[in-house]
Image 1 (tube, rainbow, N blue to C red):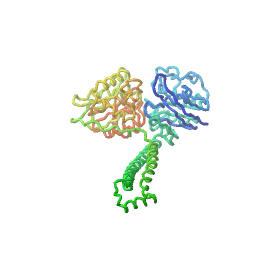
Image 2 (image 1 turned 180 degrees about the horizontal axis):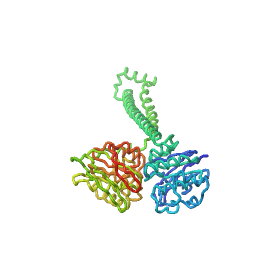
Image 3 (image 1 turned 30 degrees about the vertical axis):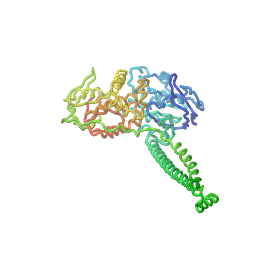
Image 4 (image 1 turned 90 degrees about the vertical axis):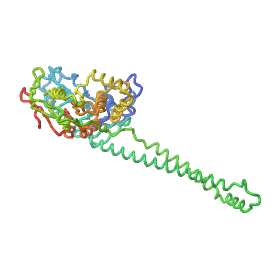
Length: 495
């Protein structure tokens, strides 16, 4: 069994260019990852595969039963109460796989995002589809819930399509990856690591081929010019104009050259070079390399000239009935601290307390976990207020993360990932001493996460990073803080 997408194109109403154009792909049994930059059309392609959207052109075949699990976990699944009321073997298995408690179905609106996501996935598996499509299933989930989701999805035996920025999930689950690079879609074997390594190798090879073809064109152009000049000299030599009528020897030599054809050799060689040059230029035109950056943000930040950037006295942080026991803590000017803990344990409360304790002489940059409409308007307004030099610096960072800077300038239809890239760029150009990031990888594409990771590892100042991304945590952490729960009490423990 396999799902075939043939020459799919789709444009949203009122848009000038298509969201996807002439995409073909085959999805066999097993999991296939869809990987690409924010806004490249991954979700659009998935919705077409699920028969939610009809393509403007192209076909989806055969007509298989599909289940689509969208990013927004707050949307109740259509078969929520079917699963809630069913105690068959299949229904109990779906509950057990996602560790779902019986009362969750009846209070969906009160559940955490992670609990809602687990119910969404359970309902999708319970439907027993031929094609199961997951759109960012681990977004906003803590490490424990990510493991639950990964293990549950691994049990699916049909055709699975996974859109995700979770590098660990992609590497452990998928057998092939459909990668979008600009307007080009390519299927490659393996998960994110294997497929991206192959993509980088192919791109490097394409660059070498184009450089070689370009050198050949330059060489042939120089040779053509040399032969053209030689042909012109030969033509001048065989001309009898200006010769004295008495110079019979020279006239005889020119005549013999014309009769033997030797005088036309240079001209023929010059003419042949034109054909060789045309072929070389045609070959060069076919050696295309998509315009992409290597996902490197650059070097930003300055270490603060102080003994520490944060000093928290031992305290009990409270928000309503919620409290966290926090010991005395310090962050030095070059410390890279990673704060972890399950969802709902108060990590953001600790972050806000840390920010309040930063002295005035330390330049702090903060990107919150939740980015709402106010943050969106502020970020776009800040960009528009900058002079051309500063605006160019900001947009160059966004461009190096392979996002369309024209969309930022228009301010229309920004995806959450594109907005986060803009906010990150606006903070970095100020060269902060202390970088505070609360779940910064939410909605970012995997290439941008790699770039963010490289930048954070080399950041010269202090960092406080809240993340559930294990690879990012392991790469960045010099110091670890972890929030643990003991019944109803929470405690922050430095490790």
